[in-house]
Image (tube, rainbow, N blue to C red):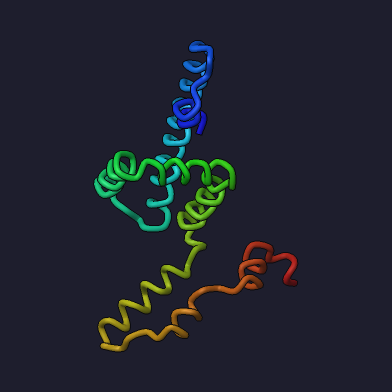
Length: 142
């Protein structure tokens, strides 16, 4: 933002203008890097993308959608998305995130039998907030 502002209204002192533009470029690169890290982690956790596919989409996002990647980096840093993604990845590694496994199991069964899963059947695979709280805190349930 500072970088664009200095082009619209240049400072009188050239030194301060160069400092402001350098700070703007460094801020842009900083957010771009965190956007790339967030994108890689997000795609690995939710889409189970291969490394080759991640690399292709990362290159496309860096060169063609750099503003989106910067805003995603800002979102990644400011909302604590990193910790939430790591929590989901940890649950997947422990096998606690069984909604996707149940969906995949039911989907493969339905695919083989010719039955198409309805929206309400899909909704039943997703646990409610109370079920999630009870699963995370089993001692409170008793």
